[in-house]
Image (tube, rainbow, N blue to C red; front, side, top):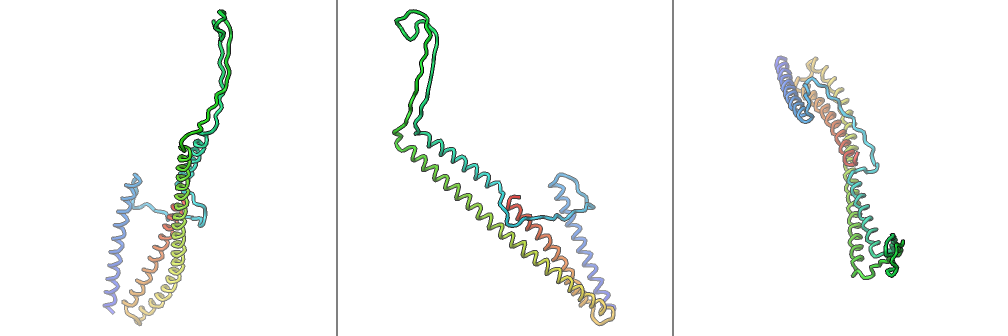
Length: 238
């Protein structure tokens, strides 16, 4: 019927508007990308979809862990230095020469001479300064250990969240593919019915729109799962 043709023409015009909006948005994004990378990118450039690979449940390799380790080594060095402050220190020395007079002030002649000896140092009374310094170092060591464990705990929690997100979206993708296959079968049947005048164009357009939205949902979920994998790798430190 004539009104059916008009309905289809309206839908075609709406689709053209959507293409215009998409092309405009694409141009804006390309110009933004050009500004970010400092290189000219044309609208004819073909962009590849990145395939992000993740290794789930692996060791964390964040740079913060290296920083914590350096802090631990620094504290260990301080601890070793403090433990040596009150240690018994024995130093040896030797000196010699040739002169007039030598060590014998009564002998007015040139003589060789030498002196050797040892020096013993032991700081017995430090008014508990050493113990206070050791206590301070012990507290700092506990703080670093706690910060390290808290960081690992929070990082693992975030990794678990991203892993659950990846698994959830992957399940959505499987369902999307099934939905699209079913809607294609329905649309094929409606296509034949529309040609034979069994249904109106509005019914056909509704189902066609459903298929279009299902395909868009699948594409969106594929992008989201790649983003979730990239976030997982970032949190893990890859």
